[in-house]
Length: 173
Image 1 (tube, one colour):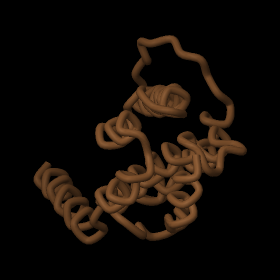
Image 2: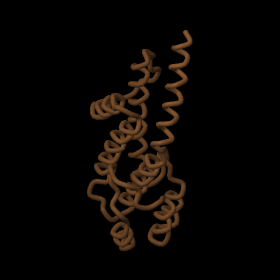
Image 3: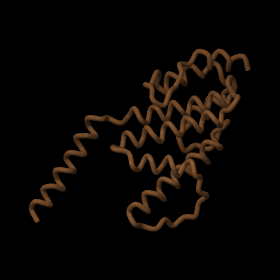
């Protein structure tokens, strides 16, 4: 247990609206001598859709429900039916609606990221220096790596390219 105190106290704080203070590989290096071999293996194998590990099953259930809500609202916006029954969550519905009405995809991702961070904090609760806190931190780091992989300029250029192509088709009609 003492190793968790040192590990968690030595890691930089992660914020949904902040920068990526370390890579996942650097995080794993910090964890290697401070967690059990089985926990370290689970951390190495961790993805956003994993189900094994402390707190990870609870995260997986939340993440799956959020994905279902996102798919449902996207389908409804496209006028398509959504084939799967799922349990609606009012908070998730509101956040997804806000994300889908965002000005751009990056803003939408940030809205979802904030909601995911808030829920991870609720899941971790009073766990500050144990395996649950380590896994909550790991998931947050994975989420930050994902959003930091988006390249604004490249995305804007791709959008402009697609938009120009649509304009050319419209003008040729």
